[in-house]
Image 1 (cartoon, helix red, strand yellow):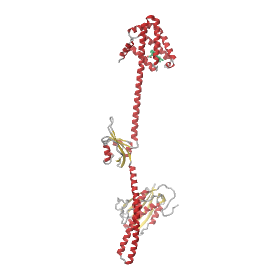
Image 2 (cartoon, rainbow, N blue to C red):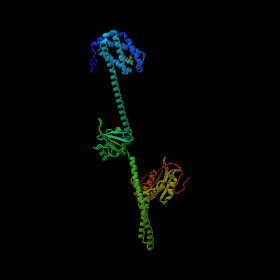
Image 3 (cartoon, protein in one colour):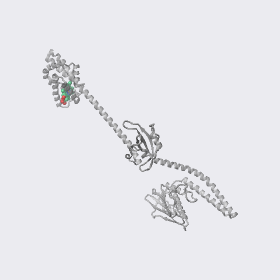
Image 4 (tube, rainbow, N blue to C red):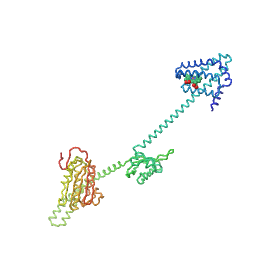
Length: 537
Ligand code: HEM
């Protein structure tokens, strides 16, 4: 509805017509001298009411309103009652809204104007005042209606502003929530990898970067199968392509890092359906379980070894007793044979059997130790003394083997199990001597040196060298020595690793060096010498 139509409609309802215009103009000249008094009275009325009076801010404003009211009265009685007129009246309403005048006060205020103007009309026109009174009622109704429209418009505008504000807040909080989500996924301590339906990487968070060593920029858009996956993993492929769009159960997925290392991820694969402009996504969420897997594997292995140890202990017991019995009887047999007649062949056969039985018995003991190692008991040990002690225990054919010590003067003390390390060194020194003897003659050097956090003990020999350096010489039952059990080095290796140390070797023809590296450990308490000797002060 146009403003013109709207005003015409209002006038029609109020029944305001040309006669009214004439009547009002007839009143004008009589009323004008009273305008100022009427305006003053209006102000007095308002002043009686505190809340209404609080609308005013200053004396100048009151003075301004006085002038405005006189002008208004002039306009109401003069016309012309056209669109510009209606606009001015509506404008008053906007000013009232702006100054915060409550709408409810406007009606009585208008009544005051009406009563005063009616009084003036009756006084001036007497009996012929009747049409003027009607015209006055109608024109002031028009005024009220027009002035009050502003309140509705202001209320609507206010509601719209509130709604806009509300939306802005909502949008703001939605954006903030999304930002928070993005940050959370980006920085979460879990791997988040998103794939598009073709398997190309679309999302690669910080943890995924940390774990794989890739920067997300290197992977985004590239197929996961060609970058991270090691070969095609059937389980993962099934989960990725699963048409059910259901979350997979937990999967173990081997991935390749940027440097080619392998790590194992424990993941769940879920399908995020397409929404709006975003296509569907396969979301892989998981974490690195490589370490846990290694722990589980070690645990399984030690459990296996433990049960093997129990079994071996029982078996060893069962085997050792009859072996000892057999040896005893062999000795009788040997003596009897010697008494009867000296048949060299038979005696030799008996010797062979005895040797084999001793070897078997040895094997059983060593195997027992390998399968069920005893606990490490660390104490500060003076390494040079330990080496000297080991050298003193070894009996060598001085003609063919020279056993030398190469030990530094300043004492090296390490927290180790003296008895066990002694066993390791004895084993290595014996191996060295055997190698030298096999080659004819030569030296075996037992040396020690201190590193910042470790002690290195070296056993060097001039033997022929290890023919196959890649052979698994530390594996149980691997041996090249006739009559060897293949457990000596395996046990030595085990003892050194139990000390969190390393056992390695270098070998070339004419020189083989075994190196035992042991962490020094916390230097505390008294220093213990070789297992057999008294502690040194
Ligand atoms: C039907 C009754 C009323 C009429 C006809 C009327 C008329 C007017 C007019 C013509 C103006 C000037 C508008 C302009 O500047 O464009 C005005 C402004 C104003 N009116 Fe009223 N008014 C009425 C009721 C009231 C009441 C009840 C109050 C207070 C309780 C009031 C307070 C004011 C104030 C504070 C201004 C602003 C003055 C200024 O800062 O210039 N009015 N009014």
